[in-house]
Amino acid sequence: MEPVRTKAEVIVRLQGQSEQLRALGVAQLGLFGSFVRDEAGPTSDVDLLAELEDRALTLNGYFAVVDFLEGLLGRPVELLTRTSLSRHIGPHILREVADVPLAA
Image 1 (tube, rainbow, N blue to C red):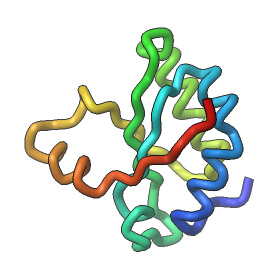
Image 2 (cartoon, rainbow, N blue to C red):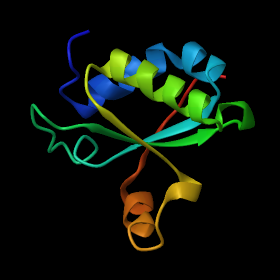
Image 3 (cartoon, helix red, strand yellow):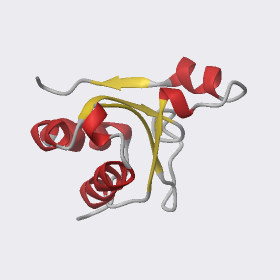
């Protein structure tokens, strides 16, 4: 798939696959980093903050979500969870994260 280039493209693609994301155990998604600041370049990855359901909180479940997202967005994905945020960087991420509503 063609790589996403803008924040809007990321959000549209994620929302267009909300059913599949939910099937993989994604409860919530937020976008942060260069894409949310409209600073992404050709080699930028997509930074996402996720709330994962218990069934996705396994090594296989996590990588299934990452693999799906990378295929969907056409770029490497850095997928973090709130519990994985460091106390040093976490507050900065939480201040800039943009919620990506997924249909229920």
